[in-house]
Image (cartoon, rainbow, N blue to C red; front, side, top):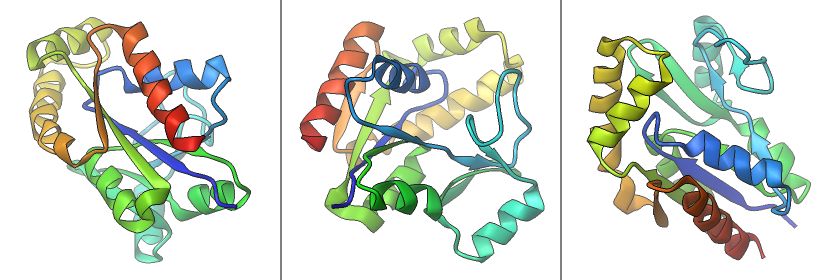
Length: 188
């Protein structure tokens, strides 16, 4: 039996990684995390193969040409992210349910490929203003990068209607529980 695919997407700073990690850490929902690939440099505390598969730009482009990705996107100019086909096929082929933390266009592509085997969940910010405050509070990006991320967020919000479900993260505990419930209903 093939495992199921859960895709969680959201604009940067919306809390999707925190929500996913809360569900995975709690442990009652049988999920394996699908590690995405990127050509960006690791941030402090990130580990290759665990946080991301960190690839050189040349290796990433070679993998695109070889059809090794089920989805990939140049999210920012020169900055690539994608999901290696092997990440999904290895885990779901063993019957494991997997969760993907990927961008919105990638999520829509995964749904096109895997259909009813995949469920898409979009994590919404309470507002663009609240998102800007969250990004600034992280202290990891310059004001220029925050402006770029907010512009990207407005674009990504346009994809929300293509997702199976939308969860507004205005209360983290409630957003985690709502997301966990949606996943549990899908895999049961």
